[in-house]
Image (cartoon, rainbow, N blue to C red; front, side, top):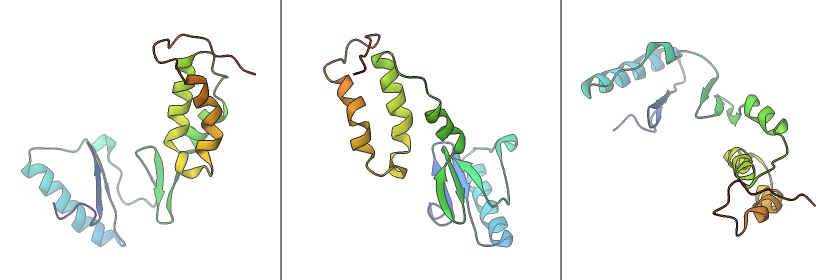
Length: 131
């Protein structure tokens, strides 16, 4: 309701609360937990983090300066083995596509890989040829 985009972002079962001060955050969290309880929903305390300047949320690092990539995901892209099958190429494009807004000209850079998939919908195990 009135909490969404007013200090609270919700995606499925992930909730991010943010405020300018710890006092404001405490008030906000009380409202969030009250709302959850009213709907018979509960937070798993082992997954909760409170009062931090930076948090991982939905695969991103979020802090007062903004949103950025998670270094572990960037490392996974850098260390990804050369795709050998259509399925491998799709998996790689899925991972890199998640962060495409951070890569200038992503579509152009991914284009040659996307071209490898044209007309190969039914054959996930088909080998891809590198030229």
